[in-house]
Length: 313
Image 1 (cartoon, rainbow, N blue to C red):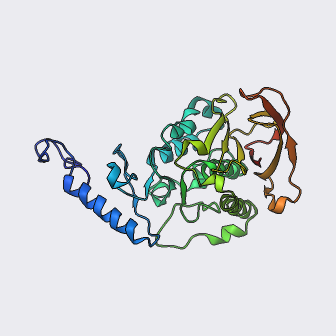
Image 2: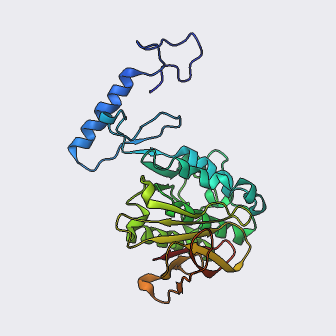
Image 3: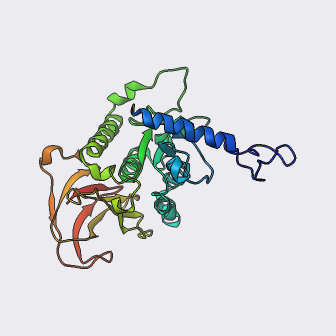
């Protein structure tokens, strides 16, 4: 709707009054529609599935934007899935696929989307996209979902992908709910449930999604080990989260992570235990003055294969 020449060859479209290819009437329609929806204050959201580089899709009309509530982050989705499908050995050569999304994360109000489109038409379900043997697929998916849920942007996960539906989505049949009774599938479903609880409990994971102040890389360049570490913050700065994701089956028994301050770092979720509810049995690590990752303080933590760890501080 935004382009007069979309899907048309030269000579089969007419430029607008300014000589451009923008559909000026459609642009005004979107601005008006989104303004009305916003002013009604009903809580309704208008979400754009827009895959070109059209600017300010979610910015206010008075600032030259289209006024949508959110925009699907198609670029992040493609990069994320291409990375996750790789054999872990080759992930070190594609490390940038997981970091590139942060270069533009604050430009729009994004949704990180794993929709029905990604699990149909011979594209495989999420669990079947994962490399490795049977157990490895579940470990990979846990790491991937952890990265997704702690990355800036709202979330969309298509039904059945939370418990590891094996076959592609088919609108003619029910989901394979019986799988949720099998150990690894049930464990994956419980882990996704814990990720959602973590998300709701810590505003750092959503309050500053489109603000550079809500995210800070600790180490974005550990490509050789395929490990990502970063901090999520809210506007108070009092309930920060440190996130570590290991995307190889290699154990790091003395993994050292740099941190911005001295203090206690309490493990609130990992890939083995899920969420430590009400802090029961949660290990606490104290940082010491020792440089790591370009930070003045650090602590060591035993990072398991495909390990994920979220600490509060």
